[in-house]
Image (tube, rainbow, N blue to C red):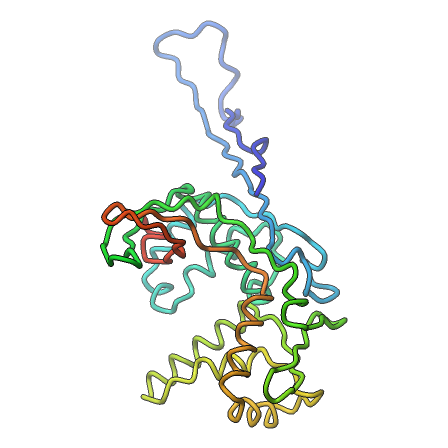
Length: 289
């Protein structure tokens, strides 16, 4: 991420309501000053590198996106009770800080959207994120400070070779499953897909239906099976898929998805053990104490 510091400045402006102030002013003279704040911007690198966006999309071939620094306006959005109840506060903040208003937030790949969330938090409250974590070895609870500025895009090079998969010409991937030998075509999910999956889960919880999150996710990212893209056929295949194939497919999808590596090294003060902890997105992430 690169900071455009040249756009940060405070200057006095003449309102035009008063004549020019003389060089020598007496104690009773007044001068009206107004602060003109030009909000600085940040250039955020996209984990996707602009790949996988179709022609005509504003981010097609773009390696970065420009956002404004978070201000009191965005803080007001984050504290809106109605937006918090709807679960739309964070999306409203991102829509507010993105400079290019032609970009539809729901069309962003999930990993790119996560990068925007991280960068927006840093512009608003800094890179230090202190929260309570649990040691995976001794289960001791303690406060730990993550340095968000050190998080980088994960390395996806070599993933296709590892899974003997291929990338198609339309931004999707094809992988052959180990047991059924079926060739499955998958696409990368967007922020809009993520919203739809969350709403589906909430509806099922409301009506006390069984949890089928993994199946719903696979239905969302599978484009075709052995070239067949009929939704009913895909659903039938998913329901009958051997567990080994299901695990292989989900592991491949996670590995090939461009995103941030959200882990950081942690040393437990209680037992001295070292581990890689994933940054927990608790309430303190955007509402620090």
